[in-house]
Image (tube, rainbow, N blue to C red; front, top):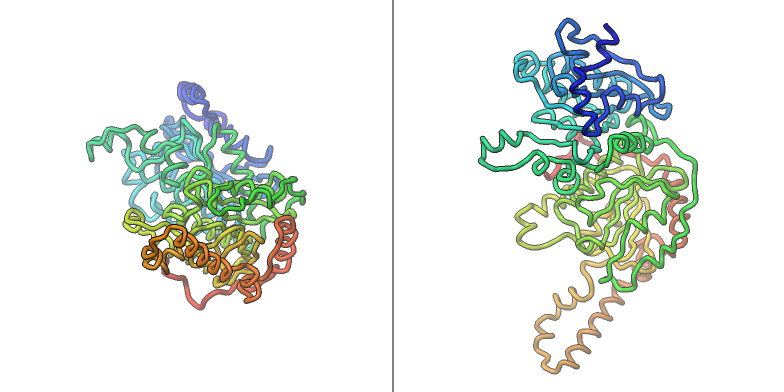
Length: 499
């Protein structure tokens, strides 16, 4: 019986998966966890039914890098990994166990969704499919929840990845969608394919539902392991420390162009600041004007947000505001200190973004930054203009420090825009071109003097001005000084998020 159950579905389904580069669900578990550590739960679910070994899902406990985890893995050789009543019960039970024990929960998803023929048993009841999502939401922020998606995650089942902290998707095989291409044609008349509508690249580069686009299943499983290495087991613990390494030999100051109009890649700056090879970028293909991810400073985990002028000038848009808000909440939930690297012209303006709700989305980001009580440091790398300063944890948002590089500028807006805003009529009235240029240059010089970073330091707007080569040591010292800070924020149950 045990061997039959552990063999999964018919050989033809194993062969079909192998032809797509897909591993058997039990092979995925074995690749992920420490050797010999997996203890299965519910192995004989639906044992008397024909052709439903383990009812299509493998659940249990294990260790990853010596740390306990709970996991589930859909077996797509069994009715395409679809859900029956026992499938649902097993998934609920393992999430409940992860929450109760304070262990990370890992979802290895490859499922066609609910078995329509079994809907009365699995869909509407108190322990039906909806209870999976309720339990995930209850566990959110209490334990890390991470998903690797190897095939479809269809209909209601698509919400399992959506409620996870991050989702790694295998390009070519993974997909998420609420309605199949056939259903979409029937309901809307649209002609599409699963790949066009909900493929891995779509979700990792366009919708933002996916976080890591992976070339293979082995890569996706490695991402799960690496991601968990930055996080504690649960919200009551601190992230595990790693062996400290030096930063790579990169001239940080040399990366910053003299002109604020010239773009530079903030990812290079981040990698030059953190411990060597420690940066794990999250959502690298979506809302690229903001770079986010985990890294280490002197072996300790930090969450990094940096405006990247290589993409859309580093301006904050609707998607980048959402990207930032969720990442800040993730770090705050799991005691990960935050590092903001500001080079931001502000939020985007115009008819299109106003209709998309840029004010609402920007407020969501600023709310998340305000509510974050972990140690947070704002570094003004080059510019922090307008509400961009606020969104990047500027002085008014209780950062543990606001640090400026010598290249930093803090203002309501840049000099060119400011002079035009204040003197537009006067400039237009000057007919002589040379006289007009001289007037504009003089006003810009006055403005630059007004926002001089040394003056702002003298006014205690920033706490210190640090040369780029000394920034890493300054950050390490300041984060160490912030250990044990009071995490209280407000007397309430929770705020009302502007979403």
